[in-house]
Length: 544
Image (spheres, rainbow, N blue to C red):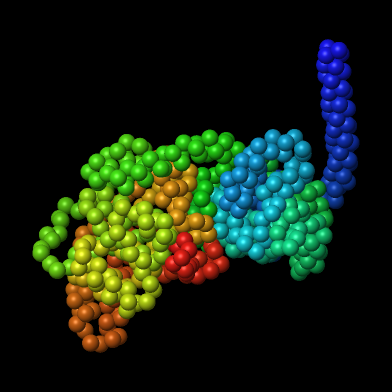
């Protein structure tokens, strides 16, 4: 009886899969024939030209360029990294794991159905108003994948229109804000009760297409896409006067767009993932994650429980790469009632701690905002500033009487090679100021965030296999203006001297690490990344 049942079961299973695969193959053949017929009819409207011939055209400024974002602008044809970023940064670790597990079915389902599965998996249940991954995370990874040759063509064009099969909220900020493209045609996501339901609304897309087609200069359009993707936007490309086709060979020969050629510099970006999450990199990251959590806890335990001369070599043994540079001409610290002031740029919350490791002594750190958890776990004394100038100045003077002080006048962290504006408050504190140039590098996780849990910043930084930290103590600032600031009665000259000292320190640190100095502030960063001014209650986790 059992043998007959097993035979019946496997026979039923065989016929089920046979019928399923046969039906899919039949549908695929029919679809291929219909696409071939449509392609032939569509091809008779105009002549296709190869992309290299577009590079030699001198009249592009007189035409409207319509290009396919993912198939003609980006070097890579894989959409997995961008949806993985949405899943991980907006949905969390569990959603990212589910997305990776479902990806083989995405590949088997076909391009259009696969795209719908990815959208459903990554966007379902995400609050529409709080979704900022498209503006704060994705632009960095999109920009790193832009082909320099294609960007050169777009830069010489007149009006520029980007079309994409992706949800518009994923690409609009990158295309319009960073590449200065005039218009973006993408798919809209359906929203119910303020939450994405993972479905795309085709009707809004058609309305956007009509807006482009009715625009000025539509009769002189030039289309740029991949040959097998023309039908994806046939309503729009059918109005083009000329069509240029980008092949995979063309894209492989392209160079990545250099950072210095970005129309708008990429100074701020958010998100925890530092690597480009391709399928292989994502699998490696998820496999490393359990070990990373254990390693991070172990490193934190070493830093909290052991003295500097013992914990430093042990931390280096765990994989942390820590380098220090101290000037040959050391400043002789004479007996003074006040301590010494160290002024550094801000890379992560661990900046003051690494300066303590470099100097092998305890320091007092002041910061503009700090999570309660980080304040409790910090092995050195940390004090939160109140943003009240007079109160903060008095408090820092009191702290200097207790010992050496570390201050990060930028007020927030910056991941890219830029320095934000230095607050001049520190320039009034004492006559001895030592600039400290900080730099860090991670390979997997960022140790900073603008929209996430601030208390996890040190944990994520120490989860990297081999994080790099560089501490470079510069020559003590010769600033007689520090004394003048305290004694000068002229308010105008006093304010000017304060800002001169702050700018001088910023310039020295920028030159030491090769960073560009800017006038941007903490407020600018949080308005771009989080939609707020970065001011939080002391009862909640701070953001920096």
